[in-house]
Image 1 (cartoon, rainbow, N blue to C red):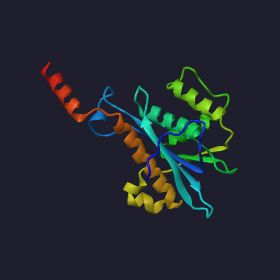
Image 2: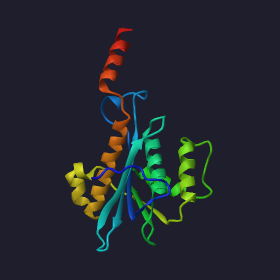
Image 3: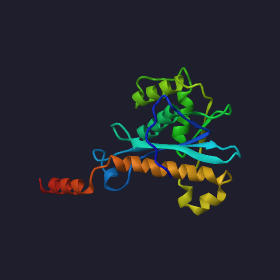
Image 4: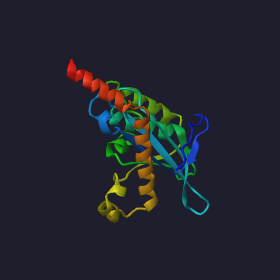
Length: 198
């Protein structure tokens, strides 16, 4: 998979399908809220002249604090809408293995629904603004998570295999986003020793 530099917001990638994910990181950084770093990712595919999906772009990054998986998923939604545009009149398909994220994508598209008291209001507002600047017909899709790691789940999957791969790519990129901003494990270990001795 190619890693792409962030494109100018004016130059959106044309895509038919975008896979998105948020990650809470792994290891020591997930055990405490002060150490946790969350990442987001989107991976965009476009159908070629033969109708075969081709990866056209991928982005990942670290979430602005506070670091929660909900914020990571909402950031991914905003980036998917802001960084991509539909390659055809069929519209833009945005897929996630988080059902809450797919539900949030539908809620964001409701022009009347924005509660300023809601958690993560800043990200809801950012996604709404990205949507207002888009003329695309956006459709959300839920895809089961981590099928690559669970062969029985994969056997039951009736959709195209490339969608499983696209989702796995988004999972991996979101983990990179979390790892990119994570603290050095040696620093964490030193702090834990200090905490125990004081």
